[in-house]
Amino acid sequence: MAAADCWDRVLQALTAKPRRQLVVSLLDADEDLWLALPEAAMLSGQQGQEVTDIELWHRHLPVLSEPGYVEWRKQPFSVRRGANFEEIGSVMEGLLRPDNDYPPELVDGNSVIEQHLSDG
Image (cartoon, rainbow, N blue to C red; front, side, top):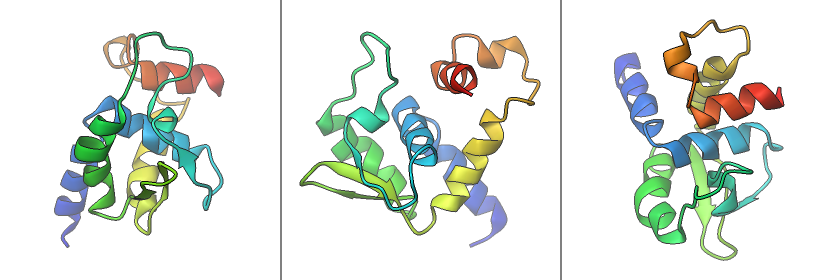
């Protein structure tokens, strides 16, 4: 697969907040650890930020599992890093580096980035 196609696939996978949060949760976990769903796709401490099993099952997990970024199972409902996680994980790590000097329009109100920067 061409590099441009890989970038398109990674960027498309990161277009939804629950998928970005899943990648962040997996970055923060041990490599082989299974994380409980839907909790791993939700921002901690945020009211009204609920992701349902159905949304994950039918919408978000297929986008992340098809290219091998994650593996998931139904019982217990959980997720872990896939064989190609490094592709998406390295991009997300780059986006979350505290030394990035993003314009406020990209950070203010972006709960995934704000939470990670405040935790770091």
